Image 1 (cartoon, one colour):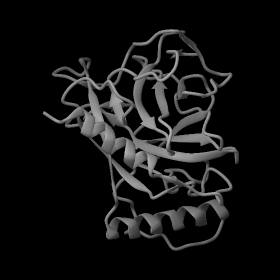
Image 2: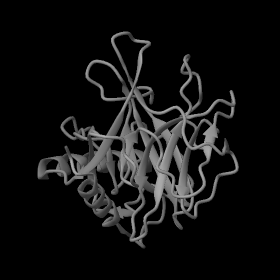
Image 3: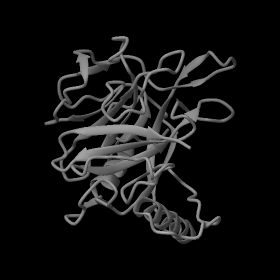
Length: 261
């Protein structure tokens, strides 16, 4: 069995080592370095420490606060927790509304159907409401039937991209910069990034021409969605796209949205 203390020390060290850049001026800049790809594996036992993970139950570092859907008032689903950069033990907790009809507007930056909460010392955004509850609905995958929901808990690891992956990523970012600034650039069919789940670096959007994020926010991480079937380890409905997490510059408040083709 995997030693829990070793897991905690290694994963916390990797996230704590992320360096902040003072030159980042907005959400499209690289605020954290190095950019590291995210991978996941099943947790051998319930996680009780402040490590990076998807699913399970939150490991609260302050008073529990479970956000609820702005539309239905039902508790959101806990998607995961992510250590903040720096020497202090702090976590960002990601929650999203998961309704049967998939109608909740979880793609909205401040729509009240997702929440990225910070503890300790965080600020709860004004558009987020919740209840003092420690446990609740959590991430799942599909079972033998499409409607089956099997709870999952996955440890998150970070790894350095290989040289070829870095080149492809940089080429795709350059293409997105050209689109965003209106500069003509020949389409690069070989520039598609291998991994869209990572922490640090610059965000890689599906529709950069439509993405509007206030300049006060700094890019934290992004996570690919999945249907939870056919080998998927979890179900997160991002419309076949990717979710994006941002932090305020003081690290006390978070935002999340997703983008797809």
